[in-house]
Image 1 (cartoon, chains in turn green, yellow):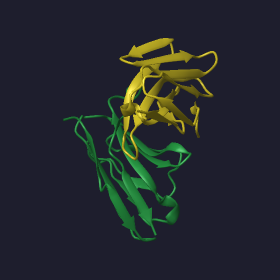
Image 2: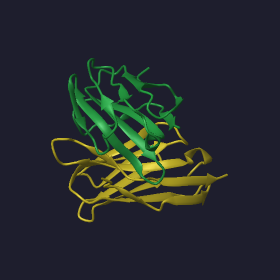
Image 3: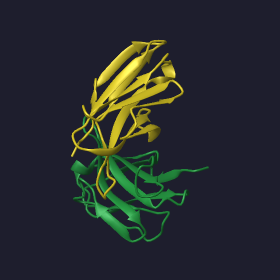
Image 4: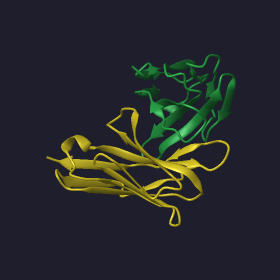
Length: 113
Length: 112
């Protein structure tokens, strides 16, 4: 089954404790992206990747890191999480560079205390 | 930066009625897409309309695009309780980034 898999689904952590949210897709998509969703603000892009070893900042990259060492994986790293990073996070992927639909993961609800 | 803005923010209708949601955007686009999100879950793609298209249909969905007014509408006909969800428009910028920018969504409640 074609899918984007995110883990974990829920995560509660404390300020400053490094964490990684994993994302994997099995559709051989070139493009992958991370979004955060906050009430009233819609989805805002954090980072995206056009292909292996090619990543770029989105609209809200501060406090986040990503890597794209393999085509299928695109982990999101929070080196020192802060309470303002409490949010619902989504990974998404699509075939090609543009004009294609995005496939979303099920989301990761992160709470930073 | 937000590009697509949906209107209304929330909509409550009776099962069987039609639901219309609107989306306005600011800059030139390659295409406009509509997505659906069930509470707290991942978004699911509904339909994509390209900048040179004016109308598109998919089952009970009808999407229109007016590039001169920079607006789009999503019509769901004969709504069902299962259509209850949030609906987002997303616009793909007309530049090399192919960036997809999401609006803040319309929450649709279909009452049985």
